[in-house]
Length: 271
Image (cartoon, rainbow, N blue to C red; front, side):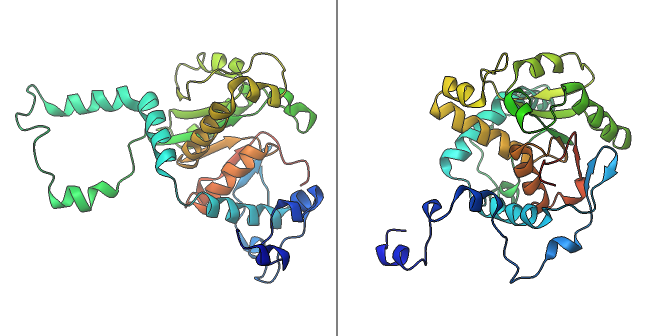
């Protein structure tokens, strides 16, 4: 990136080399074939699997790109995730741990050297989250100018459909900018909802105004935490008319979660 000659010769390009139209709707490469034509449909909208649409190529390529960009988490990002997991699931983990101890606290607890299997094998396991876990991103607010906005009840209808097939499902990672959605989630007492502790939007302010009210640090950190938590889920409900849901779906398609499927309350306006 710092090589001036590479930039001048076009070997390395930046966003300044492209128009807004090229960035959003430019042609996708065909030199490696068209793998999206051979994918099994796993997205359901209005009760039907979507077998094909006009932007399958872009959807496939963006999924590859987002997986590539998110492949390594920085120590800073890992720290944010640990804080979020502890805030959301910490009490449950503590209760399970205390229950497993029995009546007495182990005398050598904290001083015991970790065994080889703990050090080199079990340490590879990811941090605990309640499973199965449903990712639900509810997009409302000013998005009405770009897509059909659906109330929270519509998302929960799809969640209930999944639970009819998988009755063990009761945990939801809920991401949304609307406080109204968080309030409504409390009415569904037969579900366990988890979400980040951040100030949410009240009313119909623009997303830009809402993010500005949070400040640059919070408005950057908490969406990334939500995004990575969503990618770890086992089932997915959202609104594919939202770019954020589109990206979550890309992580599903490239992270071994293809057959989990994606239930959407609407479709992308370009499909």
